[in-house]
Amino acid sequence: MFDKLESLVERLDTVLQQLNDPDVAGDQNRFRDLMKEQSDLSPIVEKYKEYVQEKQNIEESLELLEEESDEEMRELAKEELSESKANVERLEEELKILLIPKDPNDDKNIIVEIRAGAGGDEAALFAADVARMYRSYAEGRRWKVETLSFNESGIGGFKEVVFMVTGQGAYSKLKYESGVHRVQRVPETESGGRIHTSTATVAVMPEAEEFDIEIDMNDCRIDVMRASGNGGQCVNTTDSAVRLTHMPTGIVIYSQTEKSQLQNKEKAFRLLRSKLYDLELERRQSEESEARRSQIGTGDRSEKIRTYNFPQGRVTEHRIKLTLYKIDSVMDGELDELIDSLIAADQAAKLAKLNEEV
Image (tube, rainbow, N blue to C red; front, side):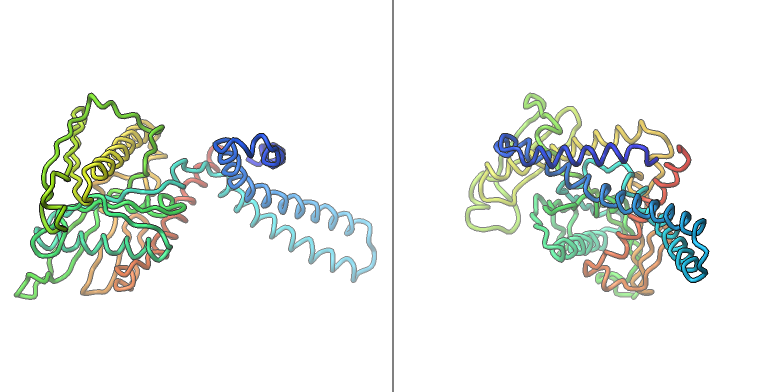
């Protein structure tokens, strides 16, 4: 598994040399690509150099034990040998994780789409709560959150809300959130105090660049109309809202959050591009092996992934059988423990697969 690491050391040296080349510095695209490659390679190379040093320490300790007759020196060599062996074992596991093929979308911004599911008005209220949870998480990491579209229910909930999260590694953290989220609680609309079960569906899509997906304008129909709902003076009195229909897939996007028709159109196309890219990713995943599909984060969108039980104060992550009794902090956007556990489970599944292939 570690055979290719020497070539990565050589490649990093080459990248660093090229970054110091004035001609490369003048080519922004080339410079950006090399900086990203340096960022990807540096942690692996640094860890590998530690690994090589510890292997060398083991050889030196073994030589010393063969040659040394002084008992005190031999004890010292044994201690160093034991420590180096433990370090090698630890570094091997860390290197394996670093060598897991990186998801090319991990560094992308994301578009989050939340839809109310079963449960009527209570489902719409829960969809709004889930949206606030992700907004709080994103803002806690100083990521930018921008609403792209929404469809409000009459009592303060959302039938559907779509927003974009801009921040380093947003997809790598939140890609595991796609699926059905279930809530069990007494709704505000329930006078009898009975616990109801409602759902909301979350889709987390990497933001697609123009080079990721090419949209044929002949496949699109654009309708303009007046925005509905609450808004400023301009929003409701001009034809600023846009409905974009992608005829081959039947995807319909309604954008009305901006005062300008041009801005709403641009937002609609950004969302369409990401939806088409997400469809392409799903198609690719469906063609991959069962082992790949069974890993965390690549499941079916209709899969029930998490339950939020308010009477018991618990959140249960069904994919990894993790239960936390801290529902208030989770709903306030403190998702690190859940997300870190999902990432660890995903890495463990991928490592197990790599070990089978070695």
